[in-house]
Length: 139
Image (cartoon, rainbow, N blue to C red):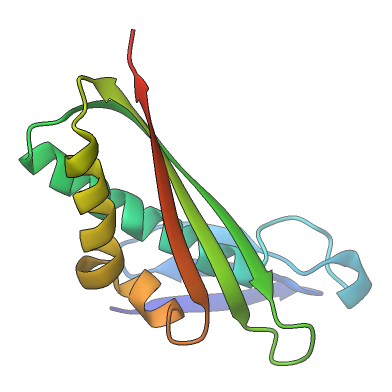
């Protein structure tokens, strides 16, 4: 995997992935940024959310669960001093579908957390990560 980050001006950067996608990152105004894009640590948290969501959705698809929507809400705390690593991350899945099996969803979340989501497992080396989920019946 390769990536490239190019400085534009002040604290504004463009990150380019090896798969050909780009994202703007910027710092807060107090550090000379212009609030034009995501903070790098926000990208890490979003990456973890995306990684675990893909795992859970893939596992539920293989289990033939009729998922129509999935939202992952993340709430994180960082250390107060440098390096301001993540110390706690709460991951909450809201899975909407038809006749979802609660045990299948619980299993998918657990498998992602413990076996498949490399981002979660990596961040779990420094942060306490907890997972919860709720099911909603699709209309």
